[in-house]
Length: 130
Image (tube, rainbow, N blue to C red; front, side):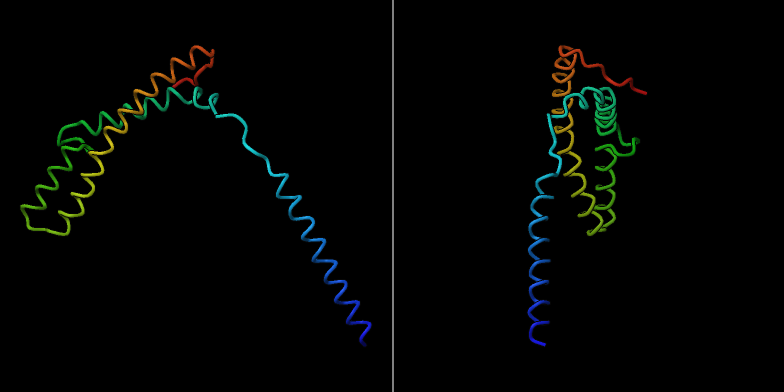
């Protein structure tokens, strides 16, 4: 029975070796991304501009506009006046984030203007906005 054990062990080692030899070869054949995606960015530019403009308009809206900083400030004030400490804390944290979002979106809007100029110079045609 000893020869059968040796044969089984040898077969297992051979199989393990074959699997190890195949695995690195498969890992090397994965496709790698090429380029910086400029064509896709130019194509989506009008939709991106529209989405950012809408978000900035919403954030700058008055207290009647859902999603505006002013409306959330009003909700924070209402929670504080009602003595709802946990709600106040939660809403105030959301307000802090929402206020920080506005400068980020304004920076992106400025960056997109430069991107639009670049895309036009390259002759890239944007996707029509709907």
